[in-house]
Image 1 (cartoon, one colour):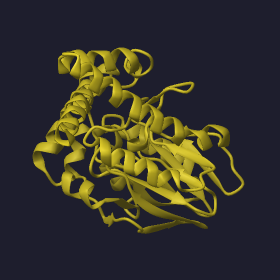
Image 2 (cartoon, one colour):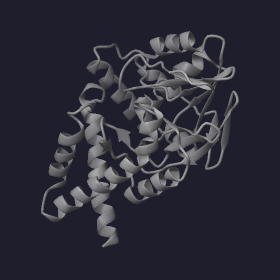
Image 3 (spheres, rainbow, N blue to C red):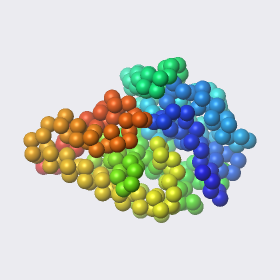
Image 4 (cartoon, rainbow, N blue to C red):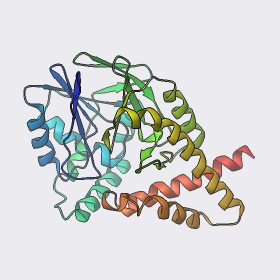
Length: 294
């Protein structure tokens, strides 16, 4: 998609593990790195999209397998690229148990897509070159991005904002577009922290949003998205708590969430195990936070 200052290309070969190349000036950054099992084609797509641009950064918005698994292979192909992530993401990547779970999910995603799991094991070699905190800045060509930590989907999630262009590289904490006015809440590990993250980003003058799974949205959609994201984050929480107080089990509440969000669009791009894993954490978290608040 063309813009006067920057261009964004989708370079991931398999849906559900998206990766976007942001080019501006003479430099480029890869936003997330998708799955590991299709790493050879991912690298080939990056080379084609890059042209004469320099791949300066690989930006990992958070530590989930469908966002980071191709990063080690990209680093091997472009050793000058700097892998950047939040401090928490860097810590999680060092945990053998977490890495093994991500490798297993990669294998299942490969099977779902009728592909060989080749490349999934490369995730074990992933290292973050530079950690980022609240207020850190990255310069890509003429654009300067400021980091905003956005815990809620994970504790390690972050977004980046370029003030001069009103461009937000979004975080899944802020919500996932599902078509029309429907937004899937991004919270998994915390409701209150998610609302705080959304409110923080809502204060920014945003013109365009680059979504981790959906790409660059137009200005009309982008300007209204966070209001809708806030509404759906609060609405789904209300439904879960009302169901819980009416005596529904957590598994029933997970199934209701699945009926609304999984079959509509995600079934083609996300393995059911990963969806349900997040949904169970979400429902349990909402109930626990409610009980703690009394």
